[in-house]
Amino acid sequence: MTKITGGCLCGAIRYKIDGEPFRTANCHCDDCRKATGSAYATNLFFKEEQIKILQGTPKKFEHLADSHNTMIKEFCSDCGSQVFGSGANRPGVKNIKVGSIDDARFVKPQVNLYTAHALSCSYIDDKIDNFQGMPPST
Image 1 (cartoon, rainbow, N blue to C red):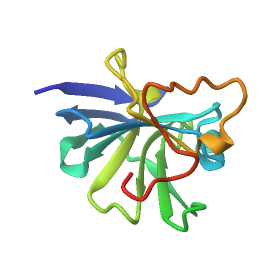
Image 2 (cartoon, rainbow, N blue to C red):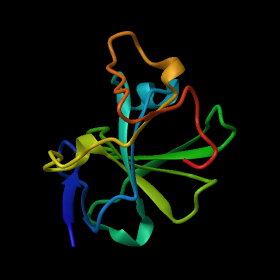
Image 3 (cartoon, rainbow, N blue to C red):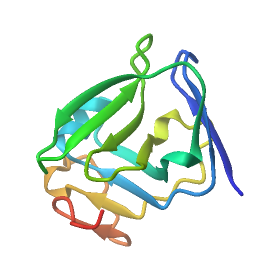
Image 4 (cartoon, rainbow, N blue to C red):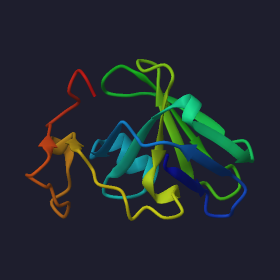
């Protein structure tokens, strides 16, 4: 079984994950860009029971996505690093921001979402699935 560790920039939040993600996605939506301060977010999706917070308590921010789904961003209240995310339409599932993983060399995105919002500087790999918005099953 794979063990993944990670945390925020200042180290106040630390976590471990047992097992593999069931989905890895690059999201190019406006909300992900704003939340991460980057061109897109790379999210690894796990069942909540796979994730164990070892240290700290993330602060939460809720917002309504353009899919009309309530989204929850979890981040460090000290350094501001976004670590986790979840959505009301997928109970029991959390995503981990790839930038919070200690050694993320294993990450291989399976899908690009919201490519219609992608910046011109973003590479869109045509060897994986690409969607202009959010597909119903993702």
